[in-house]
Length: 234
Image (cartoon, rainbow, N blue to C red; front, side, top):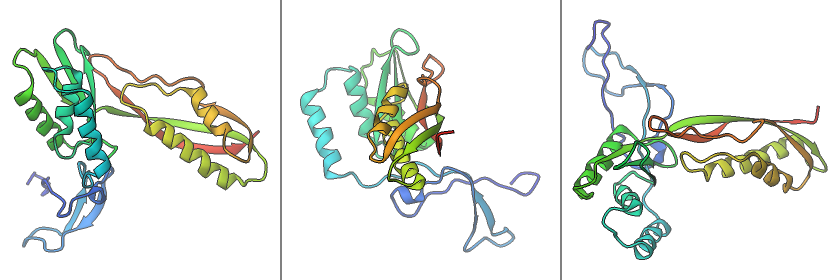
């Protein structure tokens, strides 16, 4: 308890799954607050909740082992080791990002950022199984970088509301396929929007060019969708 009578505590969801994840602060109220404690509280963030692994996901991991059998610590081994930890839904390996002898592993959880506990669990697991000669391995969460879109369209037989939803789906799907560090190619978004029935013409106002994620020894950006604005040609 600090001088203002406030305290920060760690909480855990009582049910597994993504429903308990929370990306922004939210007000809540304790059901049975201890005597002398105000029942009002603020939940800062909750992360790391994932759904049970599907048969398709399990099969994909099995096929990955068959296609790329253990090889004494190559980049595919590091990815497989990370995926062995509960709560990790994907992993991306970046050899030599911080120099010779280094291997960095960016992990995601439920298509979002992992919790600090998951990052530590993956780091501990990799430190336990990696080759003893490996100089330095670092498990981290990528830094989210939102990309805002402004799209102008000419419509034919479709409402602006329907076009906006279709365009949002297209952009979200395209950006959702990007790995941390990968660029967003503007022309690919344009092509996919052009294929939407009812859109006769389109123009991307923003971004004005390809969006390049910053990747160096201190940064690893992950491009995500920000605000999407769709309007008629002006």
